[in-house]
Structure formats: structure tokens, C-alpha cells
Amino acid sequence: LAVEVLRRGDGQQRRSLPREWRLCRLCQESVEDELHALLTCAVSEALLALRTAFWHDLDERDGGWR
Image: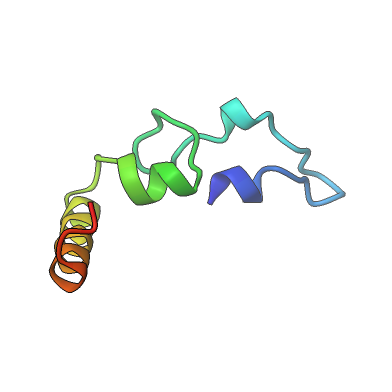
């Protein structure tokens, strides 16, 4: 995730970037962190389908976890 990779420079040429500049590689609208990647990024149809299937499977297995 960009929030981690860009947090620290490589020590030679690349310097650390401020958190607000570590944008999502897919949507370029929000910081690419765990919550964004797993729960909110909506630019990719494939990602949306996977997320929907995950929540559906979770609901089926736990039956009313919400």
C-alpha cells in the first residue's frame, strides 16, 4: 500500500512523502491505506465485486454479524 511504501524513502534517491500525497494508485482520490483499499475504493469493478462477495460470504457464515 502506498501509505506504507512511501512512508520511508529508500535512503538514497527517494525521500519520504507526506501522508496526504500517498494517493491510491487506482482512484487517485484518497490516501491508499488499509481502510481505503479494503472498504472504500470504488474505481475498480473487479475490486467492488470481490468486496461484495467477501461481505456476502461473511454474512452467510456468521449469520447476522452486523
